[in-house]
Length: 310
Image (cartoon, rainbow, N blue to C red; front, side):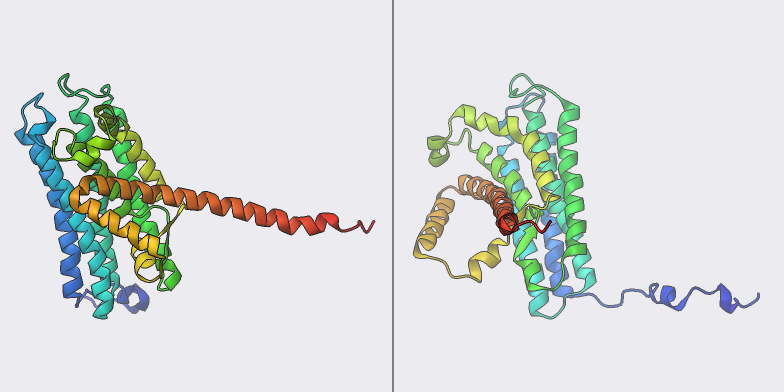
């Protein structure tokens, strides 16, 4: 057996890339894996609903499983908010943690909400007892696929474009995937209160027909959220905006009202807050476009008033 020649060996830079990962951050990784585990459980709960329910069974028979899936996605959001903060506090921020976090987010905030929304739509389209919209399997698959694929693109772009600068964490370019998942979960949770007599606030503001619109609009909501994730629409970092800035007394009063409503009827509060967050980014983006165009017009106005040199 002859020894390999020097020219046959890979370059030094290539050989350095073949090193095995020897150390990983333990505590932040466990928190990130909790995010991933909750996302998997949410998918499993919806799958259990499909398995346990009989053909043509009313949605009320499995509403508890759908609500559990929503709660699991919310718990995954808590884990997602903690892992990066714990990694920075303990000085254990690593590329491994960043990649693991993206994989967990893809399951919890990409796959789970799309599966949750699609099953809800299918449930109310396949049988006459629950029919709220016509059966279009390809359309429903396409809407869920747009959401999942755009979530993957959003997470990949975030890893590439986000740096260590403070400005990168004050504002998002495009709708964050946890916020998109929160919109889907909020609407599903609100629909689950359709036949709940204790959900008086939701029934006070929404009638049976408005509850049905949630299911009818769900395919379009999934597609729109997917497109917003890959857009350049500016969205403020909610935690950074609330915790690192001083606000007025009316803002504090409004926050207290939101907390009280959430304590009384969290489904309605979740749907209202997440839809308001999506709308805030669209309004902010439109205002910036208008102000930018107005600034360009103001810059051109002095030039128009100058006499010609010809």
